[in-house]
Amino acid sequence: MISVRQAMRILVVEDNKKVASFVEKGLREEGYAVDTAHDGVDGALKANLYDYDLLLLDIMLPGKSGLEIVHEIRRQASSVPVLLLSALDATEDVVRGLDLGADDYLTKPFTFDELLARVRALLRRGGSRRTERLIYHDLDVDRIRHVASRAGERLDLTPKEYQLLEYFMLRPEQVVRRTELLEKVWDLQFDPMSNVVDVHVANLRKKLHSGSGAPVLRTVRGVGYVLSAREPE
Image 1 (cartoon, one colour):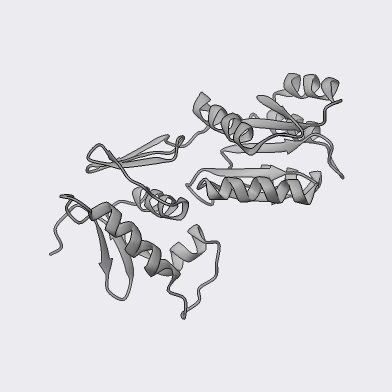
Image 2: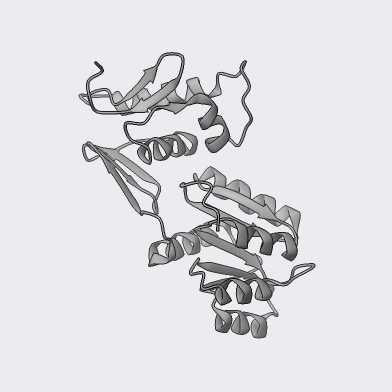
């Protein structure tokens, strides 16, 4: 598999585009990176090609069923957690899916709060292969609960500010270019006229540096930003 990012990443495979959009939007607002597929063939391709922390699979899919996808990835010894989305009358399919190696299921219709609770439970259960907690200097990021703190004080971050901090925490003392942040955090190609990165980084810096906290998020002129507790030379 190809590891393309280090943020918590979820694949949603759902042929109902309204449901897929609802789930994708909610998860992105919670700070997760999300890919979607609307048929089983595309879903299986992405599940086998990329390195995800969690798969959300509808059971009934065109081209290839969610059960077939579960069977394929477990045959390849993948331990990625799988949450099945099922119709009310799909009890037999759910049982078969769990026997094939799925970790949990959720019956439609469901509330987003219920879905989010299942997602967090599966990630907390240890199926994710990525570090659940990031610590640098006096900064602490809980990647399961999506909570960040500095010197023990919780930071009130927006989902995008959280994603930015997580990205910097994965690369402490490394200069991160603006173009990289646009591509990795915003999924956007470089736009020389856009100041979206500068605005969000400025807001994050204010929250990190409020109170008595020493500056840790610094600007490298003409290049980008660096998360560093060291004094600049």
